[in-house]
Image (cartoon, rainbow, N blue to C red; front, side):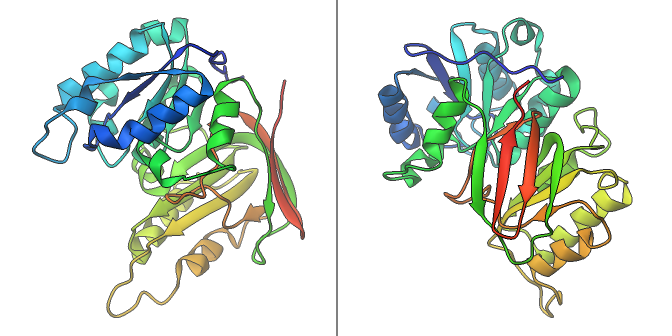
Length: 305
């Protein structure tokens, strides 16, 4: 059974740092204001004050130490990452989760943060949040759908989403542990001690800016490895800003996804609102859920045990 961190309470602290790509501190302003309106106090990490001259928000050591401080600080009850990009893989094995495991806190992010979400579930059985990050709050003006759900989850709420159906969906009901994340990072974890057991899981996948042939290749890697066998269900989120080759690959991303799961019998939904756009519901990674795909709607409901 996956352990969920305790809810954050009004007046408690949310840490914000960048474990991967560089992001100017100013991009956190909207997030800090929103957290204040929710009743929380933001604590900014050293990586948000970086004067980095390259891609990263600091050296591997600096980023690992910044995250380690927040993992170890019991007064910080949620860690909300600033952005992803690339870099978590470079520091994941430097982190010590001893103190964190005594007092788990919500870890929230997506994209490159998929590495940490999968690691926490696979190695320690701790749930985390695949969710919008601090740097994107300024892109959600007057949002009444996605950001409020993040607040609900970190304060103890359960997932319960109902969205429009897609004409390509395959109806059915699935019950299983919610796993997945960014396709590129999830496939990248194969063979590492961070890759989860997918048997019986509900797998969700999304990606951005990938070549079509690379989407095909990564999905086929998962398929050839047997990681799609025995799934309970699949949720495909947004595959945005896809790129094609010249001459063209010959299939669009929708056709690629359909070809990969065609032979299986589990329910499949497409275009679920989890993506690198503002359509990005926060999802509890590693928590048991019920996915119901019907002709009229798709629902994802957390199983409260």
